[in-house]
Each structure stands twice: as C-alpha cells, then as structure tokens.
Image 1 (cartoon, rainbow, N blue to C red):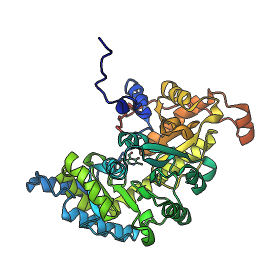
Image 2: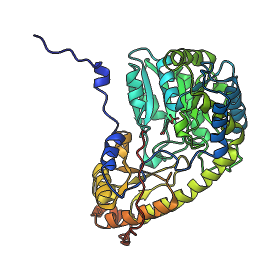
Image 3: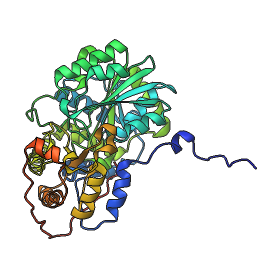
Image 4: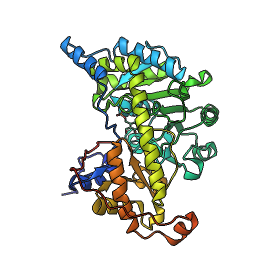
Length: 425
Ligand SMILES: Cc1ncc(COP(=O)(O)O)c(C=O)c1O
C-alpha cells in the first residue's frame, strides 16, 4: 500500500499557526496575568451604537441584506469618508460592506491575484497578511521597515522587491504593531511608486481614527485623499478599533468599481452579506460616532504617554508612536531574545505582551505592548515589569551606550485578581 494521501491541502498544511496564538495558549494557563497583549479596545461599544443594533433586531432585522451591504450603511460610509478623509466614493458601485477588515483584505487579495502573482507588504505587520496572501495562492513578499526610519515604508526598499508578477502593495498605517504613521509626502511617494509600476495599493487603514499627531477635528490624510490616484487605491477599513466594535464583525472596502465588483462576487458566494444588525450599528457609528472616537482617543493618548515614558525609564528604548494603540519596545538591552524576554515577563512578572518576531523577522528584538487596557492595569504592569527588568542582565554595550542607570525596583502591588482576555487576533 502506498503512503496515505494527505487530506489537508499542502498550502494550508504548510501555514504556521499564529505566533500570537501560541503565546496566548500559554497565557491562558497562567493566573493573575495582566495582558498588554490584546489588540482589542477595552472599552465597550458606545451604547447608542449598540442600541442601534438592538433596535434593528426589535424591528425584525433578521434577514439577509444586499450582498454589497445596506444602502443606508454604504451611503453613511461614503458621507463619513468625505467628511473625515476628503475621499469621494459612490456608495452604489464603489463600496462593499464586509465581515471586518479581515474579510476585506482576503477579498482584495483574492480578487486581484492569480496563482503565483506577488503581493508586497511591509514587516513587522498584522499577523494575517502573509497567510492571507498564501491562501490566495499568491506569493507574499515582505519588505522590512526599521526603527531608525520610524518604521515608515521606504520606496527604495519596495522598489527592490517589485517584479513583473507584483500585483499589489498591501500597507497598514497607522501600523499594527509599530504604531507608525506616514506623512503626506511619504504617502505620495508610495502612490507614485504604485503608478510607476502599475500596481494596486491595498490600504488597510483600520486604525485611521487613532492618530495622536492631528487635532481631533482635523481631517485625516488617507491614501484615498489623493484624487489623482483614485483608480489604483482600495481602502480597507472598519469599525473594530475606532468604535470598539470588534464583536460586530463589520468592515468595508471602497475603491475602483471593477475591483469592488470582483470582490463582491467572492463575498457573495462565501458570505452573502455582513450581519444585518451590525450594519445598523455601523450607520450610527458613521453618522454620530465622532464624539466617542474622540473620547477613546484621548484616553489612549494618556496611556501611551505614560507607557512610553516608563518603558524608556526601564531602559527599554521605545519611540513615541503616533497611531494605533500599541508601543513597540526594543528589548535587546535585556540580553534576551524577544521571545525569551516575553516568556520571562509572563512567568516571573505576570505580564503578557507579544514578542515582536510574531509580526515578522524585522520585529525580532522588540515587544509589542497594547495600551488598550485601563491605565490602572498598565501602571501595575509597569511595576511588575520593573521587577523583571531589574533582575535581568542589561547587555553591557546597550546599557553603556544608552547612558541609562538601572531602573528602580518597585515591588508590584498584589491586589485584585488581574484580568485576562484571549484575543483571536
Ligand atoms: C492591521 C489590522 N488590520 C485588520 C485587522 C482586523 O480587523 P477586523 O476586526 O476589522 O477584522 C486588525 C486586527 O487586529 C489589524 O490590526
């Protein structure tokens, strides 16, 4: 008898499990852990938004909607993008409502790529990019970004990776996990590169509202804010982060009609339509949710400022991120790898944070800490981290070069049971 035929398709069997998932399996078995690992707002969905879903349900909103999404939500999305991004899309043919940004990324890659086509993306990045591209039988082509450039994307680096098979460039700013943002000039350079190479830009802007470098009522400069390039940009955006709506599973894609139409075909057969009650909540968020975003953004900013200051004081070099709700701390001064330091922090300090290498090779040596957790918990986490860092050898060269004195050892206050939530991210 020959060897048993594998039941699982080889390209699926080859996929590694998420590095984050593996790490959180360990966290799940630990007690009294403060998690700075979650990529999910700690805020509940603003009540008026959740109530719109409940009202929809009370009114019998239990049926499918149009495959594209309800006309009400698509029109509200286009109103919002005009107001906040100065971006202009037609809700009839250029807007598709999806099950989170996750589905929008998947649809865009599948709609554009034939087997063997290449998609360039930057690392460190959201853990789903490479697997999503591979599942579409396309080739993931990572480009490293670096701390010395503020983790911005350099066109000369992308240029080196482009070939005749490159179909798309997938970018995420503000960035998970680095918190990096791009200036208008940097965005223009990326758009011009896409034009020169005749490729489509897939702009994952799920953290677009969480920017700390612009005034709350200032318009957001998005990749969709440049009319000259409107024919080659697909915006992938959603509600999870800015409006604390992760469980609603709601997102959208806006872009050229031919691409949105192709994405809709895949969505139509695989999903049918995004959840009806979530779409009703989405209308409320788009039209009346600015005030909620503003409130949560202010709180995130307070936490970010505190966390960055404290990490630097501990000798863990951390730049001030201008977006999202993550800091990306350089832990090389501990003399440990990012994975070993994260494990030590978890086991000895009861603090969970994600090793940077889970986000790609160029994340090695860093730790992603999320501040989508209350300030009280972040303060306690910092006290615990101080204890672990003080017990960990600072690499002599790093410590000397930084001119840092060893951090003061603050004993953690052991009080209430720390909270822990597993994140499916
Ligand atoms: C960069 C990025 N894109 C997309 C997503 C997925 O978002 P959604 O909940 O809308 O599927 C996440 C979630 O963590 C993310 O960080």
